[in-house]
Length: 147
Image (cartoon, rainbow, N blue to C red; front, side, top):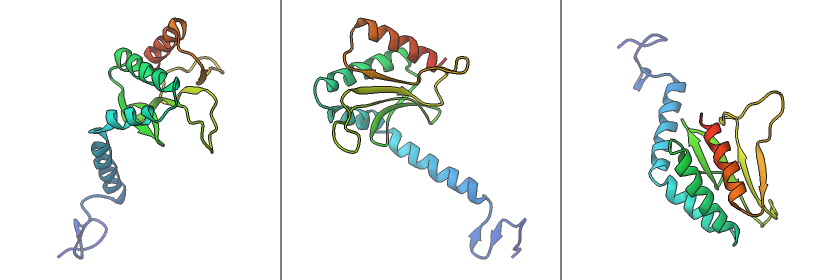
């Protein structure tokens, strides 16, 4: 049996894949396991929000899924979030308990969002009420973020 750097077998352990490739495969398996209930986990996270933010979270979820159907619903650090190609694009946060002590909902975007403009642009928004005007702004931002 051949062993060494270019061998496919080293002792009883296969070396057909590098450590990085094996780690990538394990990560993908975990993503696939989480993907099956991503929408359920996200809705459960929204359900934990206090009223009236729970209703706003449900409405935001509907807006995001209707205007960016390519995004995958999931949770991110327990927050309702939406991903594209495995990267979080946007999220919402409303947790009035420590350590957050939120007094309003935050709707934010991560680096995967295609919102870059010039040298400065907003990536998180305080949301106290969701009216037609806010919905229109969020729809435009969500559409742009996945463009």
